[in-house]
Image (cartoon, rainbow, N blue to C red; front, side, top):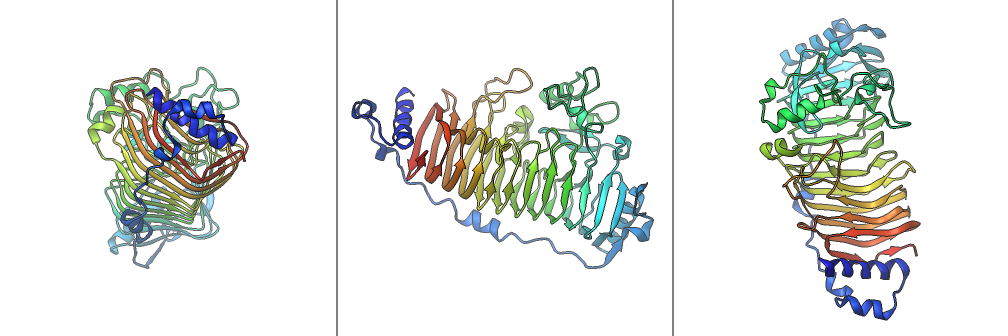
Length: 481
């Protein structure tokens, strides 16, 4: 291990400072060229299949919610109108459920197969501030753990060919007085309305109880939460669905994760704008999902812009469905903890992630690419391929890999993660923050095969923080020069 650490430092030194003295180079023994192993071409058949993924097609019969009792005053509850319009479309064999111009207040909306929920430009769906409007309980997920909880605002379970489209707005109405305080955050400046003594997810009967149930393998149907508990619902969650399209809508003020495809196959998120700065307001979190395309989107979020998940701890290992074959293309990331992130809930593994032609720029964007796990999570990350990024300002690091990520107390265990085959090429960063690469591997499982090819990073404060990493290739890479 020691030899690998020295090798990495010599390569980094030569690129960051232009030259090291000869005695330092000779003491490391291996030559830079010996580490520049040729990468196999990853942008092949899997990438091509994602680029060519087809949108679901729907019958064009229109079912306007105002014909089923919806009132566009932003005050009248329209939950039943949505339900009846969807029911009529189902009886038709599918169709377009139309939300016309105006503001419509509702509880949860449950989509059925072959239904497209379409918001016309000027339409806004306001989701109720009353948690009881998201009952009855449904099978859902909270931070990588399945449970019976409040319904996601827009939900589908075991459906095929579903969509949410149009130029309208989905407004979760979450803020410092509604939903966000349930986080229980006490950080100065990030309390989100929470005051000491209020109920929150941190209480023993809430998230700690769910985590114990998952560890004890309690059946999901017996993990009863919802009323009297304080675990926030996801905004949009297709669960165990196939052929899903979310296109063009604007989503604001989310209670929790915004778009959460769970155990899905063939998902397209296209042209969506997300503006939500609440706690855990990840923009798009594919989990246990495959063949996912996220393109032409704008993320301005209170947490990760995109976070690829695959279950937490023992539950992820039992479920054993990796998230794989995911493409992020032509997106813009503004605020967020990370641009494209893997973890920390990734115990079932993640592979074949492609990121290209994206723009990232904000003093509040902390990392460009981030992978986070620990020895309680475990999991394997194999194949993260990134190219053609234009980055303005990033706060902490361009690439951060951390096998010691810790939250919610002790996060150590016997499940050693594996991370390998991470490639960034054709990347330009104007202000790289603290580190170009921050990579903290495990002494029993070093990070393997990290390549920067044709990468230019300016204004990096410290360059590199590296531990337990093997085969770091820096090819035609310029740091601070």
